[in-house]
Image 1 (cartoon, rainbow, N blue to C red):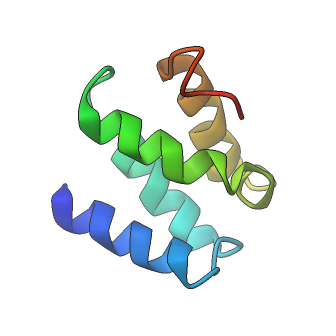
Image 2: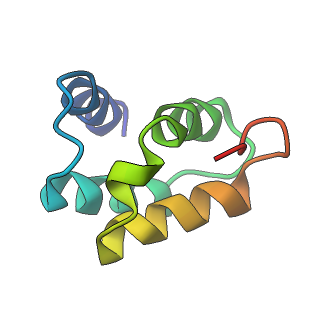
Image 3: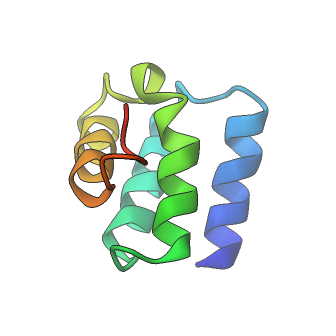
Amino acid sequence: MKSLFDQIKGVIKKGATIFTILHKAMLEYMLNIRPGTTEATEFIEHVKEHAADIAFTKDGSQVVIRCMALGTAKVSDI
């Protein structure tokens, strides 16, 4: 999971958030983390900055919706 998160962070830092393969990887990561953990909070922090770029695909929209559902009011100000 750490390796997948590091790969996702690397792609996001490069600005390649429009690729659907990234959205699929993000969804797989979201499906396998536990809510309320630091992993979930860190992931939501990275996603919220790029929600508009991610939300146009089926997988990307699921990632954004799950981030909104799992995040607290403070964290999920997407």
